[in-house]
Length: 341
Image (cartoon, rainbow, N blue to C red; front, side, top):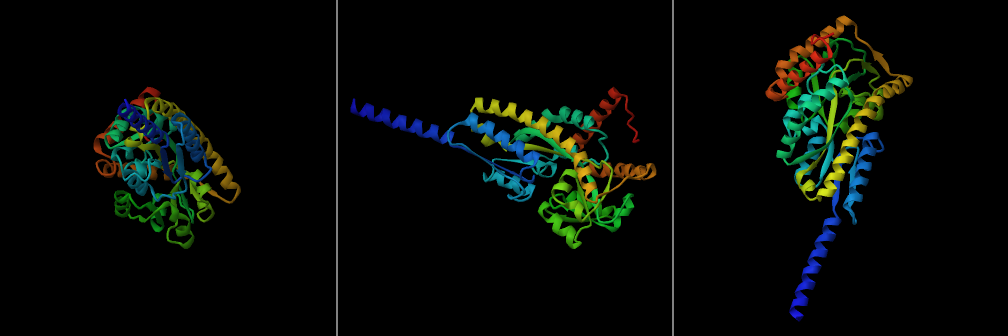
């Protein structure tokens, strides 16, 4: 009887110990977004849901402002367990799954957010399955506005930018090679290097969304913005499959509901803040340069030249073709011409 009681006590201590360990978990999330931005606030709200569902002394930590390095570095940290998740743009997401580049690296393709939403939802199930196969779970999809070109000097035509030096993501070597072949000068850097680089003249043009140009004070040294929607910045919150599998089904269900809500909020708020950011920068000296119809044709011609270079290189050929097919179907349903306006 004494031995039996001892064995039961040992089993009880193991169960209690494992329960405490399960409750005292950590989720460490990295991101480039600024502290207290709408993106950061959504991450914190999601963290409250996870902490409540997880219980115990669970800790949810968000590292904003790129404090964990660039997006490629955050992917590396997730793979070795230093981070459990990250909110990233396609630049980082494609380090996990290359096909996601189709949502961001096809310039002048999407003409509206409705087109972006339609195509994303069509390819989303297959995309998320690919991420899962690579060891990551997509919790929420978001976006951050349209990329515009912020430059020190005014520029309207594609050729105007050939005398300038572009910020380029250090991890996107294929994009840099394409730019060089077309006569442009990319300078590979990390996001944290943008402001000092433009201040010192290392670069003279930054492709950026208005929101981040305002938050990062890019417009103060690059006060000219070309008003074209070059491409949407698309992103997602992902966590490692290991972190996901460590959650109970109840916690997973709570996270799914909260993540879907966060994705809707991120997309809706980010799109509203684009116009608000431009208005705020204009009050502080931003010059908005609107290209003429002829100049817009030059930009569309440039995009058409880029697509054969992008297909099969920056974007896998099958995904490229799927996006084109879905976009064509959407425009047919909406009575929109496929021909560039």
